[in-house]
Length: 212
Image (cartoon, rainbow, N blue to C red; front, side):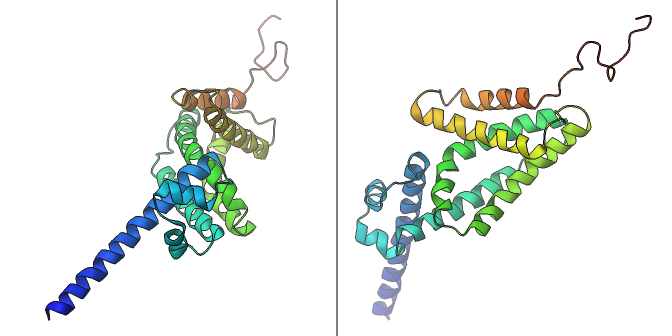
């Protein structure tokens, strides 16, 4: 009986060690891929403090590891953004959403770039659908009440937002921008680009002035 008990305890220890190694590998891959989508297996194993044999024991290829990292990044992103309250003034809500999204983009943006090389296009497109739908909904609300420009396509506005988010993340990684300043710069730059323009003086669509 004692032998059986000892064997069970040993199995549990091995499983716990395996889980710790898997978490360490995925965490290390996330950190490295966030900076360099081409990070190698050797670099990831070293950062995780495991050997190549151990890494390949859990992930049969670099592609398999990147898919696991990308899947977790997408799940954590959707979970974090789903907790945000999207009710209220569209401009204020979008500002909060942009700040939260920047942190996630900075952490996971290049991970998704790496994943794009390994995941089927349809799976990657679905991964972007949920976050994009939140932003699109806020843009539509803001355009409807005159907060945001409606004279440009909404898809272009989404493209601009993505460019600002990824551009800020790249600037931080290069050392051109302080990470502390990035969220507010992303928010302010984006909201300025989206802001509805005041009618030009003399515009027939603007309010008229009596006697003029």
